[in-house]
Length: 223
Image (spheres, rainbow, N blue to C red):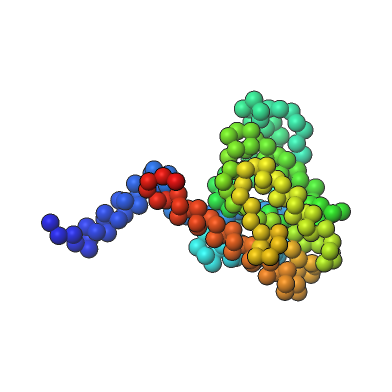
């Protein structure tokens, strides 16, 4: 029986559906960005927007989490999550954790505060401990970091290292830009041409690796 255009299309659609049901391919890939600045519309958000725009142009769905608009209390090490119980703190962390779990790639941006990330961002990263304690639910996701400082050598690399340490501890795959450690800029970020290039390069590498991993995982026959 000859294969018509209609039957060929139906076969292809059914094949894709079966692969999706088998968990081997995703219809849409997601990149989630976290802006650790307590100030809305600042340099960190500007750079994060540029990184997410790269992902959007490449066909990824994107979601942005602004810590200037979200409430996340610090971790008090109560131990509930280690016993499989939900965190007793009532804030926005449940939504943040849900977004991170849905993501294929995670971009974290922070200004430099006294040589490191902001207190708001540190609180959020500490509160992701349930994802690690409960079967490493961020393991294998791709991550990159962005940092902006008040001067060219203003603690950006140390801030990146701290963010990347969190990613490594969560079992994520960390990428940088084409030359160094990630997106590094100096304020005003909109005028830092070189810094913006490192952000775009980091975002492209993140997308490249997600696509490569997805292509590998979507093939029948295993690893």
